[in-house]
Structure formats: C-alpha cells, structure tokens
Length: 346
Image: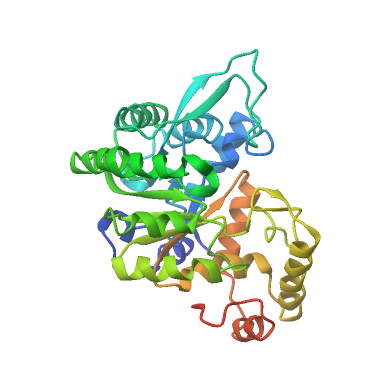
C-alpha cells in the first residue's frame, strides 16, 4: 500500500460530526507515553525516529502529557516534529500535574517511568493549569495544542481526596482550560482519565468537547463504560479510546501479555484473554487488529490512541488498523460471551 492510500485509510471519518478539533482526528493516533520511557528506556534517537516514522506512515495526531517521563515525552515529541509544518499534525497534552526536581533523599516514584531526577505532583488549581501548559508548549516547541485534557481525576486515583479534587477541577481547572480555549491556545478541552464514573460526574456540570478514556472501552471490556459512552453521544462529546490493548494484555500477536490495567494480569484475566486469541486464530485474524478497529464502531469514538515506542510498532498498528476482519468475528465473540450484546461493531 502506498503512503497516499495509507493516509486516506487512516483519515476516514470515525464518527458523528464533532466540534472542529475533534472532528478532524484520524482513526489512529500516536500515544506518547512509551517514548517517555514507560516501563523501559527508549533512546532519544529511537524515540525521534519512531515519531517521524509515524508521520511518514500517515499518523497525524500525537498525544502526550507532562507526566509521561516527567516531560521527556513532550520534549522528544517536540524535537521529532520540529521542521514539520504545524498544519500537518495535531497535538493533545494534559494538565493537572506540575513537574519538580526530585529530592535525592526520597525514594524514586513507583509509577512505571524509567526516568530519574524528576517527580510530578498533582495541581488542579488555575495557576497550576496555566503553569503546566506554558511548560508543555515550551517542551513541544509550539504556541498551541489542538486538545487540552485534565489528567487523572477520579475516586480510584485520589481516594478520600476525590470530592475536593473534583470541586477544584470544576471551580478552577476546567474554567481555566475554557479560558485558554477562548484565547486560541487550545481548540478543545476535556478529561484524560482511566475512570468512567468521574466523567459521568463532570459532564452534567461542565460542557466538555472530548474525553480520553484509557482502557475502559476496549475489545476486552465494554459493559461498565456503557453509560458513559451513551452520555457522550447524547452530549456530543468525542471519545478518544486509549489503551486499546488494555495495558499490553491484547497487544502481542500470538498470546496474551503479562500486564492488564498497568499491573500484572492475574490467571483469570489471562485465561479470558486467551479465549480471544483462540477465537481470532480460528477465524484467521489477529486480536490486535480486532482490538484497534473495534472501538471506532461506536458513534462516540473519534480516534483510537495507541502507545508506540518503535517504528516496528508503528508499522504493526497501521497494518492492524487496515486489516480486513471476517464478518463472523463479532457474532462469534458475542456468542462466546466475549463481547457485550449491545456493543457497536464494525
């Protein structure tokens, strides 16, 4: 397939008409956590090569966050995109944390990033939002981003502090983000979370353009996120479906991965995942292709965001997104109780 035809396939409309910044999202977006040394180190040159290879392969939206490698992902993304016309790609980044130098006397944070000397602290204040985005724009080498997301609010993340965090998000962070949108510093605002419940709490209180939902609306799980997805359609909120492989569980070609939801997968989870592999193998397709293409069938979903750390992973994601899937796949997944009966399918 030529680059021209690959670009056309990656950029076909992926849902209902949206606000401009989200309507133009491609089917496949680049997730920038891996080039921030998530779980394992990536060299500077390899990270830059990966981003540039994604561009050459037709990927046009790149997602990142200050938290991803404590600024490393944003810095590498900015370096890789330097010299590319700004109109040729779009960006999303996040606010809600500020980066600090690490105190050598404190233990290194156990958050999965192979980076030393830096740490991140939550800050959902108006000033924190402004300072965070200013730093992100400097690292990215741009004066605006298309999408700005409030990162990691929710009860599972903040525990007993959740009510106070939610109040500050509604009173300070989101209004500050709306102000930035009105100034043209970003074009759309929303949430970037792993938790669906907090989205349902925010949507009636504050008008969002977009939600990035990681690992909750995937081939492996849909049932609990159904109310959120329905609400997103009702309110015309675009969903960026991130974590389509559920933290690596469905990412490999031949067998389930060892991790799920950013932690080691237990035996029951891996056994259920193996059933997807067995069924797809019998039908002559791959779990990876089904996992990438499945979320796009939902009318709320505007793009699938896939974390990528190498040119080979870029090539794999592009092939999977374009691979034909057997029509019988979705019915067989339903009949095997591996897909919710009401789930939208391609």
